[in-house]
Image (tube, rainbow, N blue to C red; front, side, top):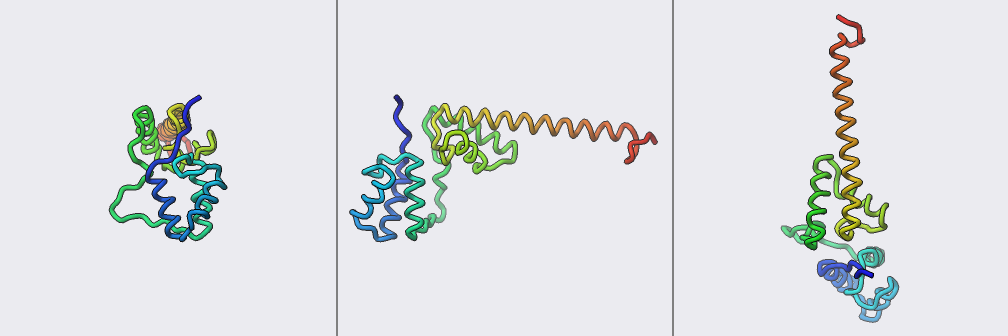
Amino acid sequence: MHKPILIGNREKALIHVAKAQLGLSDEAYREMLASVGVASSRDLTPLQFDELLRRLEAGGFKATGRRGKKSATRKKAAPDREPLLKKIEAILLDTGLTWEYANGIARNMFGVTMVRWCNAQQLWRVAAALSIYQKRKAKRAGKAAATEGAGEKEGGKDGKPS
């Protein structure tokens, strides 16, 4: 059996910022961790992290980003996953889709909230799904262009020869 994917240091830091912002006691913090099924933040999976963050936000936590800092959404991934994430990013750019679209695919296929939390096999399947979409979109664009070109050859707007 493989090791589960755990959250990174940025996510752990966010939890501790929330704890401080809400003024949680250690006891209340431990109870909140236990409510999502762990004893320590280092044992959190991405799904548990999302649930904990929702609970902290329900308690009044508001995340504020630092100015000038890069987002944690696209930090360097493990060597086996980085090429797949780059491929996904390229397909998203080519098709005009956003990372939210890819996150939605991961959520629907695997129950993982964000693509960057998928393992290599899951990323491969997300990339395959996006690739299929990309090919369909290109095929439809080709058919549309062919249809427009055929209409022009036949004549005017009404399709009658001129």
